[in-house]
Length: 350
Image 1 (tube, rainbow, N blue to C red):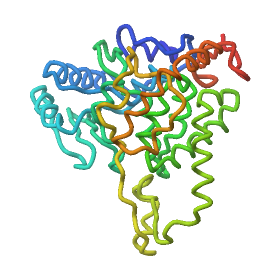
Image 2 (cartoon, helix red, strand yellow; image 1 turned 60 degrees about the vertical axis):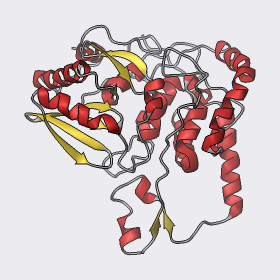
Image 3 (cartoon, rainbow, N blue to C red; image 1 turned 120 degrees about the horizontal axis):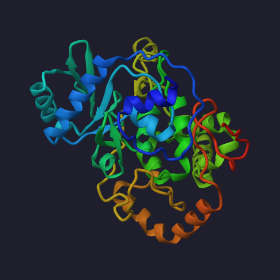
Image 4 (tube, helix red, strand yellow; image 1 turned 45 degrees about the vertical axis):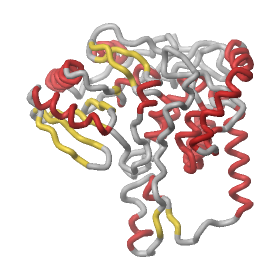
């Protein structure tokens, strides 16, 4: 079974449409998952939906919808508010699952035999807290035949950006998400999510520009201008405290030497939780809201975040004109998704 067809079979039923149509070139694919894993995931979805526990699907399933890139997965990632974790446990237990709080900071699990689903309400570094805005900007999709909400790409990028272990680095996922739908993302919300940790975002955007020099415009110029300006200001201000190390925010293991042997100080995590009124005046059926350049909201106080809406009307016309001026044509990397004509440097795939 070819790769894309295998992905459609995994989604079971009519999958949510890709942001950019076009099938990737087929490649023979050997499934590592089996009917048992799919049955467990289906039972988990049924239990959550029947119990009316709010959740979002992320991981491989959402990544496929946004990028067209399919890969095998060992589990199903369900994101939810921390307050809904007890209700989720009850729903899964009624369906025969054994539940456990795997790490009280961010994740619970539901086991059925050797298979499991993840119930994620934060990131392990306590930065990417799942809040109501994840749901407000979610995309409707279909997973294993069930209508589900998919985690927004903006928040997926935020949660993936701080994963920098030796055995796992999600930079390629971030690059593919930007390449596929960066021009539709709400970049002011992304900046606000990263807050004082904007340098992590800048690092990933620099890597993205290196990987896809022919699609740099997927990241608005004003975002790069803002981050470059911040970088210059930080450089001119000199070093921070010599004993400060923020490595623990991107790796649980790789900077222990600095804390345990060098005695360096860690930084308190600053969760990227935005107030409910953030972008409340923006409507849209999907998770990707066209960015409104003008005000870089990341450096604003929480009480001032809503002021970004004041520039939305003035910037909307310019943003729409910019969107109409180019082809909405980027789908995914070569050998993953066909790239239609119109993207500088893109190669057409039959």
